[in-house]
Image (cartoon, rainbow, N blue to C red; front, side, top):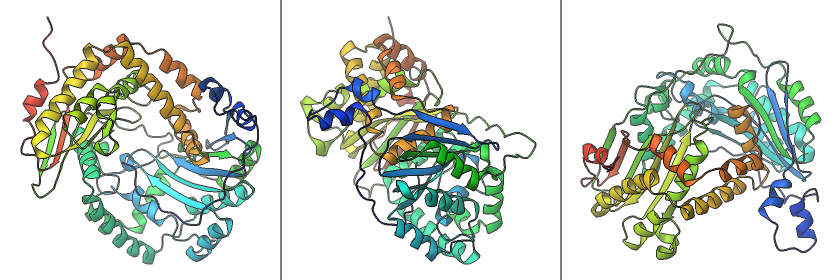
Length: 478
């Protein structure tokens, strides 16, 4: 679950793009569109430089008039103890409350005068602070990011004010049944491990975390080898490296004990959580098995399998014309209001599952449809299913690179996860290699005869017994 985003500043003007790639050239020549192959060729190189303290600087130069620059840190709720759970999220909220050099009002004025967006988010394994601004203001943006991350005042008065904000957000989150359902899915799937903790933390911690707790958390986890400064748009790599050296070159690279601690493996447990509330109008159900990690060679075949299952929403229509067999059945038979297949990846594990919203009378039918769709992935995948899914997956990869902020996010995540930016052409080649047999084999490895994690929230009296769900995770073979 990604945390809510804090923003300061106004909007940024429309980017002006230089004619540097086949896509732009084709548009200027009056062509209506470019081929997928041309779009792959038009992506600039991502350059990566490692500073002396281990901090990595990565950028993609596109010559635009705007840019996005940010700091991505391998640190989130998975790095917290039970007592400090919520510290990363608390720090995100404190980030823009003033630094030693820029009190809050001065910080806001600096961002406003640049016409920029200053944002942040927290997840289970990652924290990010980033700014979208005009390319000419890159030096100021890097300076402000440095101030926010390294020189936050963390005053007691701001700390107390933010406690109330956090408690209100926790209360609001409890009213978002999708967030509750997927959070509980982590709680039961990774019970007893740090991945089972909520990103926002419990309300008790929001009330009791101290300034010293936050200072200790920063000094323990905000280390240069865990950081990536990423930028995209109108940036020059050499300039970015120089700015990073100036403002982040003194970030400590020393870990207690002399080496970066290795994350404790988080075991997956087949189990369930049921929160029955008949006052809610709809039931929210999630079912998942342990999926692939971010570095697993099985990642792409599983993503193709997920694309075969697809997603749908009753408000979008389509019904008989939907390409996914599961979506056609769900919509034509009115089994749910919406569903989506998901694969949430972490450094050493993942959650592969389906989340759906339905009324109380169709829970059993929708669960049966989900289990049958999974079994079909393990046994009867067709060539047409795979080709459609591969095209959908390629489209989603391209869509994730629409704009400097999304590209910057992509760079930051990739360098943290893989040590480099994986080019779109490389993802494309991996997708092209997937065959129906490969999907069947990989899905069988992760899904067939496995114990799932199941969560139900709302009017869930008709949610099948766990043992019955478990019996649907295999078909007798003759």
